[in-house]
Amino acid sequence: MKSSDESPERAEFEARLAKARKAARPRVGLLAGEPGSAGVDADDLYDAATLESLGFDPARDLGFPGMPPFTRGVQPNMYRGRLWTMRQYAGFGTAEASNERYHYLLKQGQTGLSVAFDLPTQMGRDSDHDLAKGEVGRVGVAIDCLGDMRRLLAGLPLDRISTSMTINATAAILLSLYVAVADENGVSRDKLRGTIQNDILKEYVARGTYIYPPRPSLRLISDIFAFCSNEVPHWNTISISGYHMREAGCDAAQEIAFTLADGIAYVQTAVEAGLDVDDFGGQLSFFFN
Image (cartoon, rainbow, N blue to C red; front, side, top):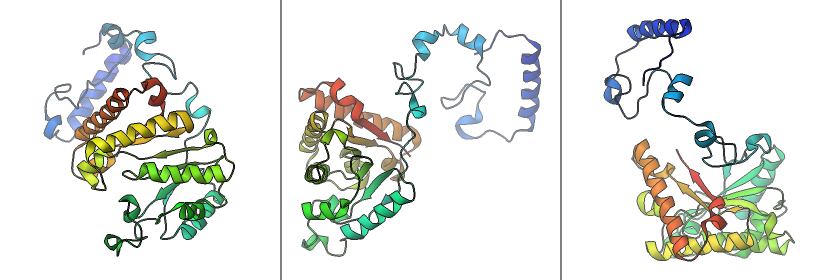
């Protein structure tokens, strides 16, 4: 959209832009057309005059931090109130080895944990199952029972850190074990912070670590939404993920589209189960490439 600005500064910008275009390398693919002609392209400049011509209303279209339309962030103070959590994805073969690693990382200044589980744990199989042979502890920690979770979390300040658990089909089980250990150690559930990935739809699409058919799996997810909204209010109940689909071959636009479609499906399932989106919506998170 052409601006009505005829200032000397604008004229100088236009001259510099024309010179830069002549020196630029040829545009290819979607960008080969004129500026603004491709859906992924944009005009050369947007300024106050452009906004005025579009009828831009700051109160309506920009808003305030922590308020709709959330163009300035979802929290009123954003990172001035609390920095983002820094954590390294880690899970060694045994609960004891992983626990040692977590203590080391926290001593180095890490502010949260990110737990990697082995494939048998992700698929709901005990380490002594025939189908688990050769996979136990290879890509993460093996957790078969409450005792394993006790050893994994021994001595960790669960009321002062957040824990991300990359787990999907068995997310309800691993979260239950985590909460049970917190209960045993006298940590109030409303002090627990963390995330479970719990995104089963992308498992059907990209990764394959699913156990149950889609509809029963969605039922489990909506049950987790309900439990956490009542019992573990500061826990992020799902990390709706596009990363894995992008790694499996989709492009950036498809990654966004499929991830948002999955998110809509999760919300619809929970609402149809009688949940109020305002009770669980704040606990949804996203993970993009």
